[in-house]
Length: 612
Image 1 (cartoon, rainbow, N blue to C red):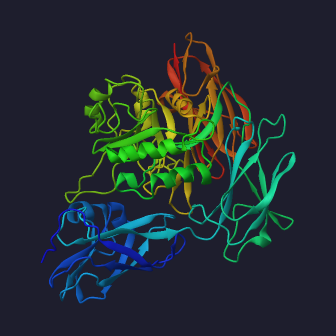
Image 2: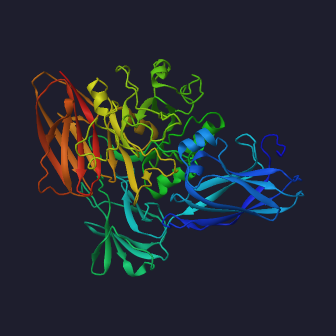
Image 3: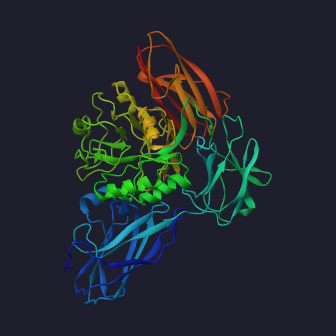
């Protein structure tokens, strides 16, 4: 029997018992949900526990479901582990378990549902579930949704995250951030004494329990600054550690990422994340407001722009409100952005105004589609940036007939100037090349698919590089793989404010970092990364490389057309390099920098394009 429904009901569902799941736990947890029945139900009626979105279903091993408080029998449940295609093709309502009511139920009854599951380790997220009439369309509710939460685990590392350049008043904002073993911000069990030091001595003393922001004034005349946190290890709880520290006379020392306090060539260095997904996407987690506060207050980024899927109408209005709420010139910058996905290519669009014609279903009526078709609409507009991503990848998920849900990005003939950037790497790996003899070193998961950055550059496209996660966890920069991994976009900008960040991205003055916040300034004959050098044929070219790393360089390479590689000298190099590399006589080509630190972290600087 089907329960009558007429759209969304205002039923009541609450989490009666939390599963107390943590990212670092491996055993299943149990949640108890209580449903306050608001209208009479007849015997034979069926109700379903459902996931509110696709991510909820694929986020767990669903172990067991139960129902108490009324006479009910289970009649169906999902498989323990689900694939993308299981849901898309066979379970569009995202059902988890179905129960048939054995006797009439009166309004006011209390029903308890138990859910035992091993949820994916994503801290601070809520895997939303709700109650629906069996057979009702997707989105119809009897009660809920409520969230099954996962919390961060005990402290495993301490990050000293410094902004790469100074604040307008000359100080540098530093965040002391405990992380769990999966890379998520957490808290110490106790208040841990910490002293923050520079080369000039101690600059702050206090206690750290949760992520803590400190403003430090760099020592006068110091072009490169690194801070050291001296931690009293006796303050750690029994299940805590700081495994990224080195011991020193009973203390633990943790070094920050490098900082260049002064402006360089009129620009300041900034780090941010411009491609991750939140609950606004429908298949993402965490509210956008939480994500933005994490970007600013916990991860200590300079700018952010989410890439949610097709946020139109009320979802775009919410996106705009929350981006505007944290956008403060000089402190933290946001851009407006969204993702258009198709089976033949994914790309994101970014603007400085919330009413740009190309917002999803804006004045242009644009909703994305195949890039080959979208170009005709995009060509009619200005003042935006389009950034293709996972260009050389094919979806792992396949349909029942074995075909893929999406394919590599279909690079067209070079035209116009709005495809200014490309994600050189993201959660799906490095997209630089078609083939990698050393794929593990360069974190390449896909090869020979025809959509690599090098294939597009060879065809005449001119773009710079960004790094994005494309995660759906609501955590900017973080990839929940192994012990946690992070991807950043660096940009040289005139200031830490919206228009300046956009201008720096548009000018391609960018670099991408994976598992490091290394500082990179790359130029050819004084033209900064992303720029265009026009010169006489045969003019001698020289690359200038200034880098500050977090681990010594394993290799540094300058790449030009046809994957011609010039090796920069790194033997015996320390963490800070300022070198010049001859590139030979000028020809029409491009040059970009790629590097690997000895800890495996990757760095890419945007090309300089040479025309003779």
